[in-house]
Length: 100
Ligand SMILES: [Zn+2]
View 1 (cartoon, rainbow, N blue to C red):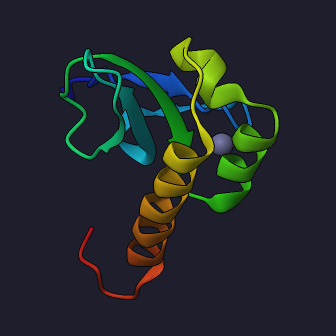
View 2 (spheres, rainbow, N blue to C red):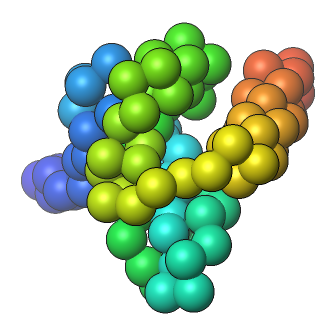
């Protein structure tokens, strides 16, 4: 008999779809008020999730859903940094043979 594994699900703040946590990028607001991408999904702080695609990220940016979800104001510099980091991540994801 096969056991059914419970996959933790989270909702993307871009498209609002619920997906397995593993398929989403976690953005965290640390207790020190730093915003960063939590690749391991284990960092302390308030987190929010977004799909591995720039459409969702742009959508979330436009509607200010990241700051809303994290209940904080994010300044432009921080957002730019986040944008860069996510772009790097997205490029890696679409690279053939990345072994994921
Ligand atoms: Zn999405």
